[in-house]
Image (tube, rainbow, N blue to C red; front, side, top):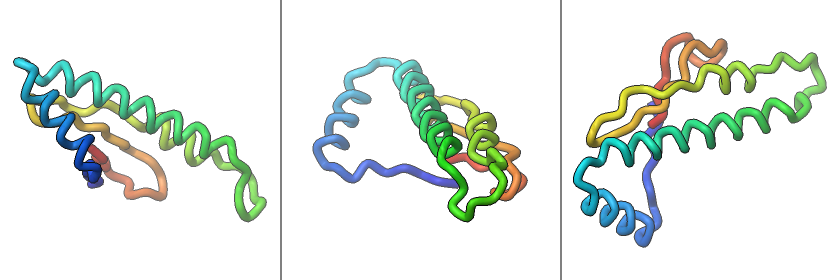
Length: 97
């Protein structure tokens, strides 16, 4: 599992104020989780477009990673982005959130 931590104090304070200001945080977390999934998918698409470093046959591994990126459960405290079923990563569902 991968957990992302916000290191910038100003950003962390702004996020804490935002979460404290909303009455129902789940819609906000859902929007952030959807945006995070899209960001990851764009990153994986860009990685898939680069040629292989060793010059071998293009296997489109990163396209498989992109296509395996899914929204997991969203609660009032967290939103999960799951990357499941990718060969050579783990064979199980990894949950970077």
